[in-house]
Image (cartoon, rainbow, N blue to C red; front, side, top):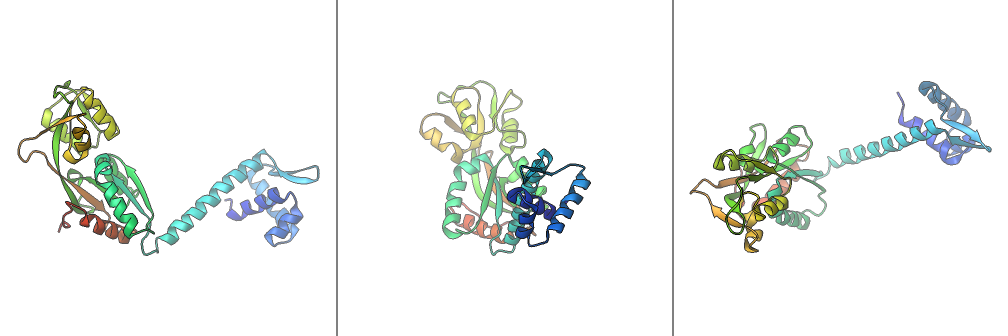
Length: 283
């Protein structure tokens, strides 16, 4: 198996153009450089360097090996940085959020995080509740903000915001029979189907896209009132409340209790709890 040190020797020869200068740079004798290169070439069955006009230059295979080596070095450095950061007071945090939450709730939360936790490094990703919980299960995310229907007993949870779903229609109120919804895995999509029954589906990936299609009269949808208020105020859509209690939903946080980023999760959730309409943790 190739080692990082193999790439260091090959890179030194390529950069200096000389076995002698490469040895000086690496702090070893020339024979060490020559021996390691020969062993590497024998293992790969390829010439990696050749002498042209008195200078050692990489062959095509040598250039390919150097390219892989550079990528391996970057990954190694990134892994070391991330692993060291896990011991920090606030480890990096990967957050996943629904599109509607990203549009309405996330800006205020991120502003609070920037003010109170300026050193916390965040990575953000949006998706459907189903996609986000799946990413949490496989360890690709540390904290997800999803619809309450996506709750999973394997994870710790907290209700963050309570919402009211409303029917969203074109300005005139008349729309085609289609349901304009997010991708499969969206809890609002399932609620829409349960409310209006089977109908043709127009599937989009963004909140803007859904609002645009509804505004154009291509169908109707169900969304949190807070997520469509801006467009309703502009007259681009109209909304209609559902029957009493039928529109109640909640946005919850899910995370692994033993997550390496649990200190950062706790800090972010503490800030979220101070924002309007936050609630206490579940028992």
